[in-house]
Image (cartoon, rainbow, N blue to C red; front, side, top):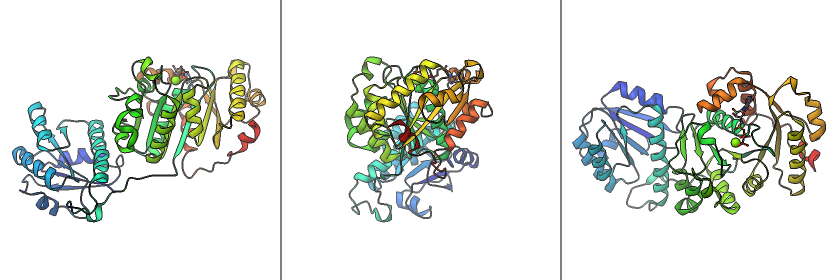
Length: 407
Ligand SMILES: Nc1ncnc2c1ncn2[C@@H]1O[C@H](COP(=O)(O)OP(=O)(O)OP(=O)(O)O)[C@@H](O)[C@H]1O
Ligand SMILES: [Mg+2]
């Protein structure tokens, strides 16, 4: 379990730091209230209790010159501990800190989301670094050896529909942020609408890296390197967005997607995948690796018929994941179609009805998922109950039922 150690003389900063991090990052936080820094890493580590910290943040109040020197010594003597320096807005100081061996710097006035983003990035890189350090070697690793976590209880949830514009991205982004509350920093949303993906817009993110970085280069061989290419969203989730250039996205092949999902599912409890309309190679690769699929349709005859065809085809190709649910979105009484009509056409039950809501479009345009923007909205409440079905305690009563109906 990772540990964060904050060294500062400023109780107000301590309170802000804890508010930003507690419950959103795994592990324990300890604060050493002091402005005087010792000369050596071991002296500083001696002031904390318990296991070796993963990350030490030297906060406001410490002497910055002493901090820079100590950062350099840590880098040589204790490379398994990552240091972050909190600095006033001063570029030259930030550069000096990075040169000295600090892993990152935090602006003194950084808000909670910036703090969370920096800390999670440094924690991920620290985990990767510790894995490659010699075991029990000159670093005195002792009880803090880190083994790369590999989970097998992960849920890979694909959101798909035969038709465009029915609400896949709305469902996927709301599901992901909802799961972020159940499993903070343990949920990732992947945009596999490689050409025209809009997860970044729906979550108001400006990603530094995209899908292309994640499926090429060093990320391919190391799931922890891959994690550094993800973008952190304030709802305690990660996102992997599509490249800004649609042509670039098209160069990503199905085998790369299969490998990517394998890597992500070894690291995250929930992998939510948004797809382009229809059954392109990326969606099929995702479905092959999925544990769950959510079929989304609107309340219109062509959409519902299209869904039936998609279900039939996937059944023939044996690409139906273990758990299947059907979500009717933008449901409206005045369409002339009833739930019974839809169920009769698709020959299986409808699991979720998300009503049409004016707030949905507003939330999309604001880049804030509906369940965060207007949690009491009627559509938000249905999306929240979709999230709850993925809670580890929820009985998966419908498992297998749809499959039987579909094949
Ligand atoms: N329940 C709803 N009520 C009203 N509007 C909705 C609802 N769900 C989604 N919308 C709106 O419908 C539009 C399309 O939704 P969204 O982008 O989620 O669909 P999509 O299936 O991902 O589309 P595409 O196939 O183009 O990727 C958005 O403007 C969204 O805000
Ligand atoms: Mg979409």
